[in-house]
Image (cartoon, rainbow, N blue to C red):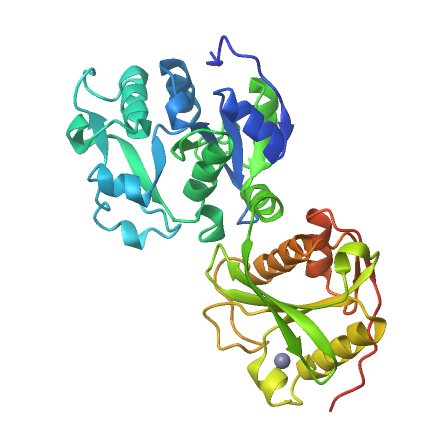
Length: 373
Ligand SMILES: [Zn+2]
């Protein structure tokens, strides 16, 4: 017998928007962990929307381990310390001590009891006294900043709950395979499961892309007139809202009024930009871009200064795709400057994709770069 969710309109599809609609109305979605080639799937629902019926659905289709992703501040408020050895989890899941509701339940393991425990974890009025430890629900500390800081299942689940208008607390459980009962479901079986139960599928990559294209990534801090060798620019300073980095835009003319505004997106490179190192083309590209926009009387050089690196174009990046984040930051800066369409002076597929995700049409110039030996 298959346990179905009842009494709720269902919608199938893929992607963040239908997933948010489903979660906003209190339903679950299938979250695909696409970090690995063999992607597993998880049922996810906003914890404050959990009912006995949905908890039973989660138990029936998973191996029964129900996890609840919470912000670190909530874990601290509810006195949920890290489970011993959690730091050694190969998936980086920051599991806390298990809990049950302290009242209103029997053994704690039934769907009814676990739904009550999950609801209490989502309730801002709950306190540490509302739980007994150990129990049958696993709270998981979601990294601050969500998928921007860690591209994990707990972070994506909490991000989805928040974006759907709920508290950032989400119940999640790994989907078991029916075809191969000794394994987790993956691939086509996840699609079949979602279709059968009228659920939307969404991947961790979808959540990251949605946040990069939809959320504010920088705030404008200061504007100053800056005369350069190439000409006079207006320099605009930005504060990165995700990583606290400081970025600059060097602006010539009124990009707000232009079409196909010449743009060069530059990543800080200490040895190239300052000392003119010939190991890379950074200084050459920067000089050419500044000469071009001053000659044309309009244009922008977005100067990106990623935090936590030595400021070299070859610097190593963190686990999260820093290049992708920086491209989206550049797109947001250009949007803030009122740029409506972009004429990229240096082609870069990542920059193009980020600009297009932010709704900025882009064409490529293909700046000629002399061979550097
Ligand atoms: Zn360089």
